[in-house]
Amino acid sequence: MPIAPSLDQPPPLDAAPLLSIQNLSAQFGTGAAVLVGVSLTVAVGQRVALVGESGSGKTITALSILQLLDEVRYTTGAVTFAGMDLLAASKPQLRRIRGREIGMIFQEPMTALNPLKTIGAQISEVIVQHEGLSSTAVHTRVIELLEQVQLSEPTERARAFPHQLSGGQRQRAMIAMALACRPKLLIADEPTTALDVTLQRQIMELLMALQQSWGMALLLITHDLNLVRRYADVVAVMQHGHIVEHGAVADIFAHPQHPYTQQLLAAAPVPELLPVIAADAPTVLAAHELTVEFRQPRPRFPGEKRRWWSSATLPFIALDQLSLQLAAGETLGVIGESGSGKSTLALALLRLIHSRGDIAIEGKAVQGLSEQAFRPFRRHIQIVFQDPFGALSPRMTLGEIIGEGLRVHEPRLLPDDRLEKIQAVMHAVGLTDMSLHRYPHEFSGGQRQRIAIARALILRPRILILDEPTSALDATVQKQILTLLRDLQRTLGLSYLFITHDLRVVQAMAHRVMVLYQGRVVEAGETARVFHAPQHAYTQQLIASI
Image (cartoon, rainbow, N blue to C red; front, side):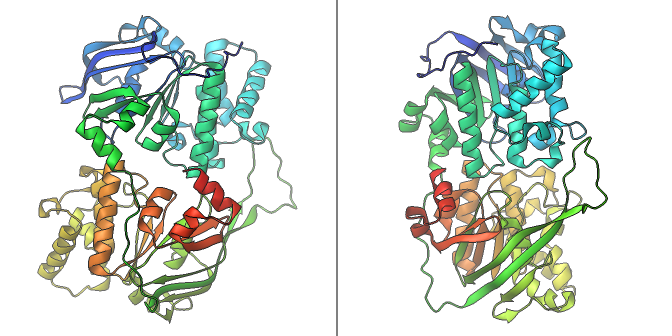
């Protein structure tokens, strides 16, 4: 198949559209409208970004293009692709377009990929469906695609199942599947949301290279404005199912007209003047030569024979002699790519996994204590887990979730006193008493994160471990949570161990920063120094990815 010439310049804004959405309105059943008068065009070779908060209608718009929402009723409008009315297209016509003419990278590769089929088999399905090649030709094409998306050892990766690949590898496999038939239009729905900054840049640079060399049009759906600024020609801003602003990226970023666009752009985290930490401030948390070792299953691929002399597991050093100190009132940022040991460090400090080395909380050595002896220390060090959707029990009300720590550490507390403490911490994080008897699924992502913070604060800890506390949140909600965390730190004198892959967030929040790479600390120091004069090559690579 011939390759289209590289597109050195983006097509003009008034170029003939490949995809045209005109005045599209939609609703689920008889409920409220989820899309209202949406109009959007994408020309051949053009990069169009669709941005907005969660629930704004971005993904519904994308799925409507491919007619993947059976339960949605379209009340007005039209969607045309290369002159074909997709809303009126028959199922055979849609099958020919899906995958062949329009490819889609879905939002979460771990759930979008079939866990029971190998990567090669899933890519093969697309090719067989649309091109009817021989099995040998299909296999060759699969390997070529995996090479093009820069997956190492493509033959072995084709035989692997999704769970045997890392997050970045799964995302590359999704891209290979979406590009299997070299579509004219690629829809990328949050293609880098769960990836660290270095992987984000690698994935986006890969997409841009393939898009240019093949002359594809790209519809990029994201809430990351930095991706839009760097990679898109045109941006459409979406709020509550409406397109509220649309135009060239440079114009929108320089002169936003709509208040919501202005709010989005203003939500980017910026460094603030942090409270000064006195030189004689007491150390509330310390670790010395902390080491965590796992035994992990040796990877095996279909067709591989097991040798009787080979071990079924391999040793893996997740943390390698890590040392740190955290002062009262200080925020220590911990950054590094996925798999560098950040979350392992959190679990080790909380003694939720076995580790070697020394841990001290408020000057008291705790590593050798029994679980019963360590329990009183748990109220001094709490954690806000990474996923606000998975960290809260769906069977418990907000009041039960927040008050759980009191039942463990203060079992004799009278019900009225317990309720008073729960309500006080709810008010501190911006939750109302009316929420007390509601369940997690009734709250937004930002509200769930406030619940998780309240649960951690109920015991009045001195130390909070924040494991990616804003990674699943939109820019405006992220700003609200960061402001809340700053206010709580000033009011309560908290110390934060702030784990994140978002370098802008750690730059805005942390007094000092520690860089992890493959379980080791490769650089540490004052945040301003590390960001403006990084010494280690890996730190330089991270900073360059911003």
